[in-house]
Length: 577
Image 1 (cartoon, rainbow, N blue to C red):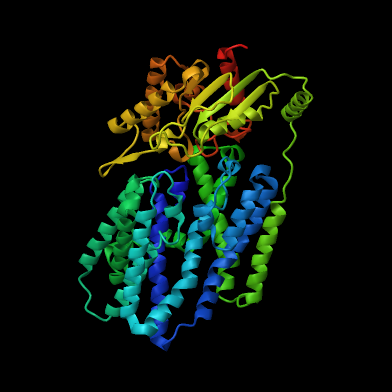
Image 2 (cartoon, helix red, strand yellow):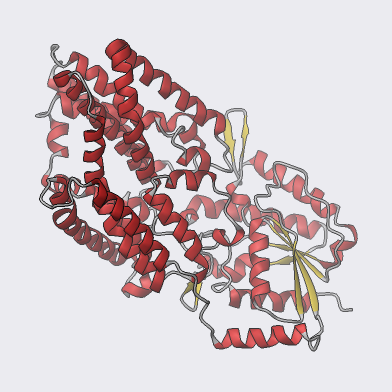
């Protein structure tokens, strides 16, 4: 996960979460079964108390840092979202907030949340709350056989839910949903149940277990190196294959603890990292959000090394000063439910205090913008040009940046449709609102694809390119009188999680089609791609603010200078009168 978040240097590193899901399902189920075998019961209160002592202290220790970040570093526009992120984290429902919340336009362009990685902790905690109850009920009804049946049925239901709810354009629901991501935990639980039943049996030779472990490592390693989170193969069985590989890996090291695979994974550096892995996961992403190239004064490998060092330093301090003393009962608050309740309340209070709304800082540019706006309100600055933006959410975001200039002579109409996919439906009718200039921008087109049979097809493949060209030509042909004022904008290379050679190649194919169809229709081309990424080197920020925070959409502050450049080009070609 650390490597994945380090600029996605390991494209499939996010699957480390699934490895942990499997391991957690195995360990927790093994503990519950062992307790039931010893005493004939499962003490639910004691189990939940142990989980709280293990998990809450480190999480609560993170909250003051989040509150300080919110108070002194977060942008005023991001405070409301950050507050809700924090409350969802403390309530262990962050995954459902990510999966189901209808994000507003402003949230699309907010800075990365330092808590966006806590969705996996939410799934884990939900498992800790529900699973012991289900295990106890199954064991009381018909013993281990009923538990195996319960696990198998629930895992199948989770797999079916993922397949049924999967939408290649909107993967958040299946990626973050507890119901759709439960298979990994359940696979681990199933192995714990089956292994517990056969633990007294004859074990196979160690070299067979090593072979199983090597196979598991090979599958997991290949997935980490080659799969990204948007690959449709993941949602059509890829998750389940990697999770089963994790089961094989766990089986190898538990059945043959002296085998080669077990010895390799017991190397001191790995064990040391494992000791503080919870704290490292908690802190690594907030550290990455705070420790930017501007603050660190370095970039590239040096920056990632600095982030890793900071993460490990904080994680070891958290483990020795907070987590271990409370878990081992060395403090008075270790066994106090009241202390846990007060800690949660204190964490929420800090979040509220840190995210109190505050005004945007007033800059000289802002003062001039306000003066211009006042002139427009008084009617002292007549409108000079009306610009309409058409297309998807990137068109709307560029339109917002144009409005952000606050030029009283410019009227901006937002005619885009967030989530619009030219491939999946007919182009919308051209609006009747008058405009001097119209800009068509489909900046998210490289994200879309469709199936041809069982093959997922994207830009640069003939079926995709042909359909995109036909749909675009159909839309431009219907422009009618609007064609004289119309510009087609090229797509800049995406950044962030999309900054990779395959995506750049797809953008090149899309731009070739845009230029070709526009030329055939004698429609002007706004070379937005070249303006942002001249000779392939993309402008990333302006005045210390990212131009495209999520790699695709435009930030009102970071893209303000770009908006002025776009305005100058459009005005130069706008019809007069």
